[in-house]
Amino acid sequence: MKDEDKVHDYWQSYSDLMAALLLMFALLIVIMIYKYAGIAAELNLQKAKVDDLIGVRARIIDQLFKEFSNSDMTLSIDPQTGAISFSEGVFFDKDKFELKEEGKRYLNEFIPRYLSILMDPRFKKYISQIIVEGHTDDTGDYMYNLELSQKRAFEVVRYILQSNIKGIDSKTKADLMSYITANGRSYSQLIIENGKVNRQKSRRVEFKFRLKEEEMIMEMQKILGKGSVK
Image (cartoon, rainbow, N blue to C red):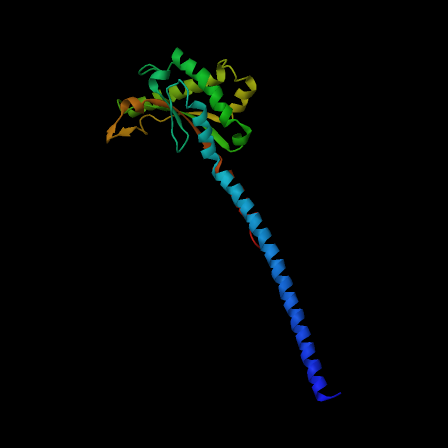
């Protein structure tokens, strides 16, 4: 074989090798594109699930506003927490803890609509507690007001669980016992307006809900763990 033939064969083999290497790199690039496209899609899916968890409270609050925006009941909804507040006069006379007839009518209308949202299967699994809180103004002794506010919250819960409220059957009540609690706050959370205590607004009963935040955090960590790249 002539020398130029050897050189020609060498360069032909070299070019074939380079072509094969280029083909391998092209295949690797295609594989990596598909792989990371799949990972990106998975991460986007997991992010959507996390956003869904984070938005639970916001969605509950949105439903509460839709439910009670046109209500004739005198109530206010905190747009940040979803706490629903009723003035003291709706449920109780001054310095009393016996429910007024007006208060009973309010509860008969309010509770079925309120629970229809919190106990909805979409939200129920995230609910840790439903809290009824009694609040007073800063007139008088703290301990007296603590006892009064606790008795008022207790009376509201007693009425909910022991009265025949239309739309709240025995099964619902039994289920509700795992969630509902009564707390008296005395005047520890006064309503301050323009630097002064608004005693009328401070005397109130609030309905709050607490989410299973620890469980939600664990679920978010689990979701994010699934989307991690190994």
